[in-house]
Image (cartoon, rainbow, N blue to C red; front, top):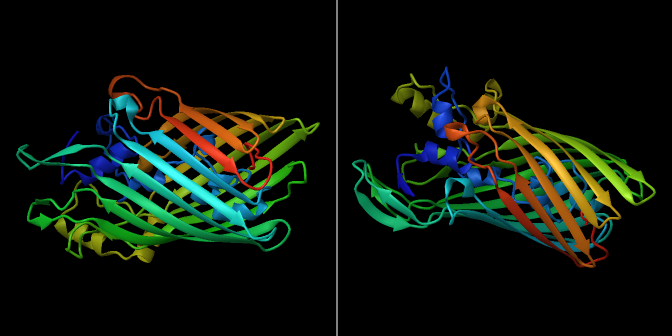
Length: 380
């Protein structure tokens, strides 16, 4: 791939799987809300990936850290570890771009748990060019987020969780362009989650969740204090219900709604003063200003589980034009044996030509290990 250091917004859209060419053909210009470190918006788990990329109110599992850290006290096992690998944008012919993740937790008792996770995103080998298209140097941009969380039951049905996150993003490898020397960017963020469940011992009942994620500092790739970018702060709520038949068949239906807490950038007619004002906005100011834009996303999905060993999943994801107007259908399967579990998800192809979804044929593989009891696909 060839990139100029000036193409930050376009690169963010591409990494999220938003077709820049198709958006450009829209009858009216769309002011898409972009952020730095967009890999934090990619679902890093095959179970969630099979249900429309949702996880705030689904039944607790090993990868709850990525969606709602408050779910861990309600897991059935005392500890678990999960690994996921996601080839990214394979439909565009990119074979060296991928997201890998690792998550785990440990319960001290039935009331509290600690958890940790790592997300690593590699953009592959990129040939950088100057404004005239002349080759500069090759580099492998990479980013990661490292989390540490704590969660605790507030009652038999309600839990609270918090997590701290360190974010590292090295996109240019120290290159210089347009009078700037580019460096690796770092940021610190946090998550706060709530989870409420009425599920009985068999798992039947309602689950409700809410989570603020990526609440933290801006990130900068230069020494210029005015060039600091928002990270993808988000507020999400979800609800789901599980029906159990004869302790063999379980069906769960879920819905989720997310609001990106990032203000929209200045429109196409903006001048340098408008951009300077946008860049000078503080983090908290940006959260409040975000409610003036329509950067919304929603998911619906379901999971059928047989005998706590085999699972079938399906989901739909959609979002507003200000988020990129992506929409797609996902499918997934899961299987458990003894202490091991394997999940697989697939994003169905959609669109044609320039309107083809860049995320078509996206797959995810998750390998799960349970260290404290029988592993269940839906809830450890």
